[in-house]
Length: 484
Image 1 (cartoon, helix red, strand yellow):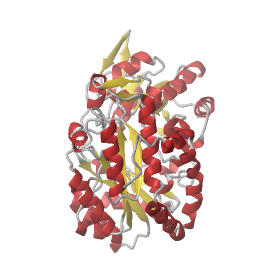
Image 2: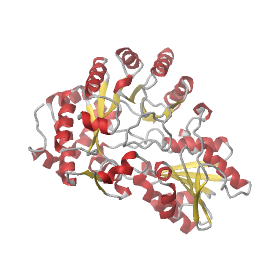
Image 3: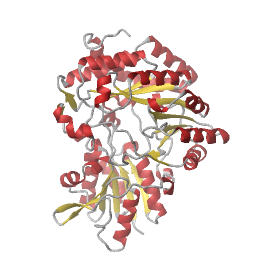
Image 4: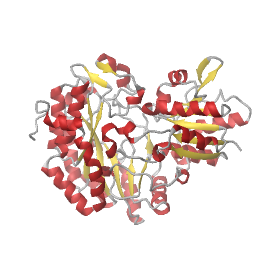
């Protein structure tokens, strides 16, 4: 029986989160768990090595996988992890050149030919959703074929790099087996979300849909597409029940791009949770234009304690320029009604978008401080391959092309009129001025009283805010006004 080892390559918290590493999270590689489940269901022996969680070195990963004597190794990688993935493949080729190395994930999907050209250690690339593609490829190889005719691949033929044609998206998501969580060593206890995104441990995350119909220019939709596809309510509930009853998970983060987009589905899921008296807390991501008071009340009753909203900017012109399709009044209203429902709010912001100015960033910080937000996440504008932003970023600023730095925490895009140093100071000032206010501090005091375990996690994060860049930003009075 052919076997495959699926690898999440080494990526330290510092590589992923920079100076905010202490506030970072390590979560299960759901994509690999889904691939593993499909491979297993089709008769292939499969295992997973999650080096990002285990903090394994590249050499340790290769030693471990070679000892399992696989015919295939499948490696997943985002843009910032593609070099780490290539190093794994390179070490494999040195030790066992007969093992076929496959690369999948967002980066190779966005740049298939370029990825294969730069990294000759990859034998084959899987483009887009990989479940059906991977199984079809291994079946073709078993049958003695080269696999060239399997759709959804980028491969080598002679000296050329060839694409085999796009594979249609999976229409019936319910046809997929549940993720193979059992193949993750130490699941769920080894995996810990960021402190402000988790109410109880052990915790895990879940994706209950694929595709996003929105048109934001900074998002890459090349893997799952623009069409919103859903696991059914019943299927989703059974996944939740498995996590809670089989793995003792007590908090679930729904990581759908917009969990609240289909209200009827959310309501039906909440009803099932209540009917079955399933005891767990949960949070989700939502759009400000997809919620209302009735929905929020039912979500709260079913265990929802936090919703994260993509706000991006407090400047209306910037929102329009990235095709966010929301306005500031709608944001204010949605945050207020969420707070009235006694659900905590988190705002996701992006600094340094095209056409950004120091004044527009100041507007964004003031906006964040005057609306009903409990928490924020602030990333730098990053022109990822496969995005509209990535195609046009050089027209409106300077781009650092180093893929290793594209983790949202490095200022790799600097819009015209800024310096990298200015952006970094604004970023640090945003965090300090939002969190070091009496109301937010008091909010955290009450949270820690209700959940004493949170206190120790907050104390672990706190030194990040005293990083030299944060201290410097706090002294930079001309950058950002400290009044509300």
